Length: 297
View (cartoon, rainbow, N blue to C red):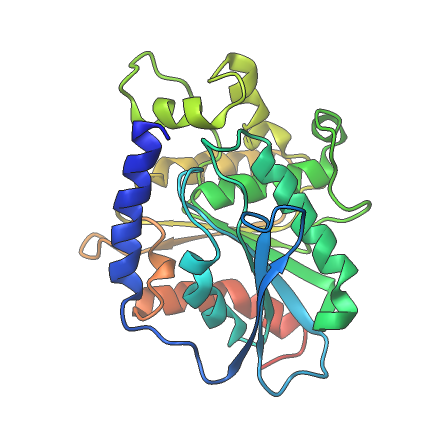
């Protein structure tokens, strides 16, 4: 374990413990827990959450791709957020993927492909509406979801890997929250992002490595319709404009939301703090298009 990854896991874990303290499983949610979607029962596991009372209905699906700086996070850290999304009449798939430094990129991207294949293969068992599969990701999870969406829609990028997304599939729409979309190397070896990239990237951070994980150059006109947001106090706030420009150039349908104001500092990935009004507003707005489109109230 590198010093930077160990530090992130400790600091992020303490913050998330405080964020979720006192939260309980909603009474109206049923859970299917610890399902293995690959071959590694430690890393390749997922949960499914559905509203109680809709057992016989096929529901639209949200696949959640968790954040955590590429080196931290799992489905347990995102369980309350994902269950909260499920209360909006969705089936929500919440999964753990292989992290750096134990696993280099593209392990996390391969796992994301496996999850979507699992969703399609298990649609009848869990009541998934395969015509309405959406996805949400935040921070590093938004980055990973952006790359996955590129893998689904950019044949040149897809040829770079020995695995693939489900044939003919792309999410119906995606939501990218406080994401990182293009990363650049620093000449300062003490730079935090550069240290993380050494843990993540297969060659430690070559030019080819950085290009391989550049979301912006993977966007084509076939990229899924995209909702993306940032907020006051988000340390990745500058990334939103870069993403927006690439979506515009490629004529990808998209919607941008900015949360907070000069007197309200919401911070990075504020939508995970599900007890707060700003989080409720953001999560409602991301889901409302899906719920209305699918006839749910």
